[in-house]
Amino acid sequence: MRPEGLEAVMQRVPQLKWAVLSWSRPFFVSLQSQSRYTAAHGAFEMVQYQDQIKAENGVDAGELGFELTESSLILVDYIAPPAAISDYVTTLYHFRCDEAKIRDVQPASVGHLAIFPRGKGEMHFRDGHRDPNPEIAMMTPLSTANPIVVDGPFHVVGAALTPLGWASLTGLHAGEHRDRLREAREILGDDVVALGERLNDGYRSGTISGHECALALAEFIGTKVKPINSRHAELIKVVNTWLGSSLNPDLSDLLERAAYSERQVQRLTERYFGLSPQALARKYRALRAAALLSFPSLTPEFEAELGDAFFDQSHMIREINRFVGRTPARLRDTDSPYLSEMIDPKNLRELGG
Image (cartoon, rainbow, N blue to C red; front, side, top):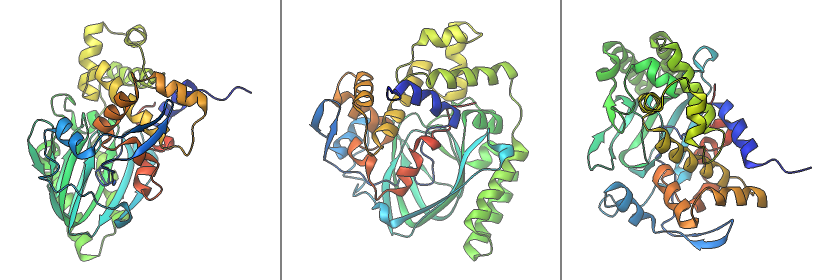
């Protein structure tokens, strides 16, 4: 029997809903500054990760003290969202790290609603600005990976949103509001502050568990999401299917499936996904390549198809580093349970109906 090809895997993944690593520990996965990895075309040298941080993010990793936090020091629990909000939330999570300083990288992702009962830090963005983490926060959609430095202990409880969830909950243009870590009140109003303060106080006092906080956030989201334009919702599904059709989907295929002009498709894709179709496909090519490279082994067919998706090996490394924030050699790290969980195909849930 012919082995299942990469295209077939890509067709399955979209139905699982969304690919990006969540905000709970997305920025807490240890990386190597240099290592070796064997791929479709043999062994090659990894780029220096600290140099990559500076080149890709405009941040000097040395100045940030980028000795990245060991994965073994981090605990993360995942809570399935209630079925009623599963179209809007990909996962709920409870992250804990009790180190004095946590340093890592947040991969590209869709928005998150989160509370921070413990720990203060900053996210460093490519344009040079830095956002502190509010105690009750909305992380807007991220177009690339971004470095994070946090004074611990650091505990986070949150909900990772789908593109539909971001639009239905916030009503905001994903492209115009991307790449920020903001006070949730600015986006969701005073109700989220009352909830967040109650949950943070209860968590700190030990009267509310992380699991209970996560479910309370889910309940809040369920009461606040609003329907979006039905044709726009259908376009989100069409874009999801298109992204899942190939590692390098052709724009003409999307335009053929969409009930809009090319200009409208460009505009609406950026509104709901935060990027143009071409940039979005580039982002998910890297995320899916990372998911595939996390497998214990790949068939020669898989390796060939993965190799064909990039110009060469160095191109693949740069793209994965840009969007995932780690080198391919670290994607199979068995000591990184968070990373293994979040890039497992069953959690590639953004891309689905």
